[in-house]
Structures are given as structure tokens and as C-alpha cells.
Image (cartoon, rainbow, N blue to C red; front, top):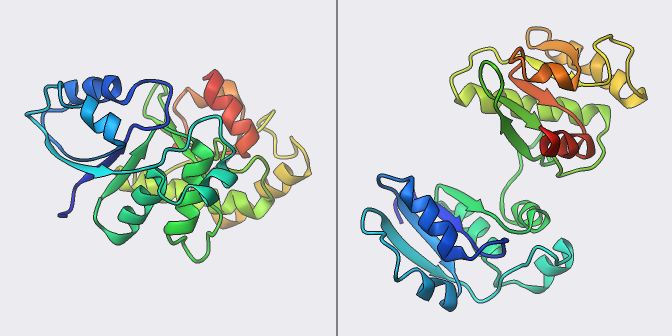
Length: 235
């Protein structure tokens, strides 16, 4: 396969894969997609108008459903689409993998098949949220429920790097907290504040309350996965 191929895995979600693909295709002028699918899913695509897209199909035999335990499923279903997708991504056969299924299974498969940065071995989930100015990158939004102070440093590194790829030269970083003062929050957050201030003197702007995030004054928001997931789903 050549580069710039998007791996699209519409299996294991709440809606039929064909319905999702129809909606996605209606928003694309052109694209090269590698579609993961069971035999039934691939057959359901045949009636869709996809002539404007370059398509190839990657057959899979197993699907991890939303209600399955992620770790058990990832161990037992070696032929699941998420395993195959992450492996193809690591091998360079696809440029990106997009899935709508079991988040925990995708995270586990990524840890199995994709190399981590040497100094940042713990993954995080990143979400882009709109603000009054430009989108803010929020992490972690659910990969890890808790975080030690050093994990906030890792997340800030990842968030800054991500925003730089979007053309933001000097991303501003804030720590989600119950107040803007330096001594707000529990022990881990207070220690995280000190470490962020030390490691990112030009980027870190301090604590920020949830209500102020949407003013667009920061580019990266770091938080524990438990808090981040609630924040994401109430935004």
C-alpha cells in the first residue's frame, strides 16, 4: 500500500457500519480508504455510492463489541479488526487508523502494536474541543483514570507536540483545577503544578477552571483521565 491511506474501522459501534460509511462518504470529495469489515459488513457496502473514493477492503473475522471487557477481548480475539488495524499502522501500510468501537480495546491494541516514545511510555487519550478562539487539546480524557505528577509532564509534552503539528508555535498549557490559585487542588495537582511550571516556563500558564477553558486562552489542557472524561462528556 502507498502512503496517505486512512484505515477505517466501523465495526463494533452503536450503528450499522453501512450507515456510518454512507454519512462519512457524503462529506468526502476524495480519499483513499482501507475499510475493515466482516463478510456481512463488506456486503452491506455494495449498495452505497462510493465511486468518488479509492477503496480497498481488509477482511476480518472477529469484532470486539462495546460491552466486552477490553483486556479479555484483546487477548482472546487475535483476529479482531483493532489488532489488524494497529499492526498495519505500525508496519506503515496505512497512515492512520480510525475506529469507533471499544475504546479500551483500541488502547490495549495500540500498546501492543505501536511503539511508545522512550520518555513517555504511558498513553493518553486526546480530544479537541472548540472554544471562542481556536480548539483546545484536552488530555487525558479517559485512558488512565488517575495520574501522578510526572504523568502531567508527559501529557503536556504530547499536547504541545500535537498542537505544534497544527501550526501553533508556542502552545499555552494549563492544568484543569478547582481554582486558578497555585495551591488549589489535592496533593498530586499541587505537585503537578510545580513540575509543569519548572518544565515548561514558556508554555505553562497555571491552573484553569472548567468554565474558563472555552474562552480560548489555552491550547493544551492536562488533567487526570477520570476528570477529563467527565469534562469531555459535559462540554
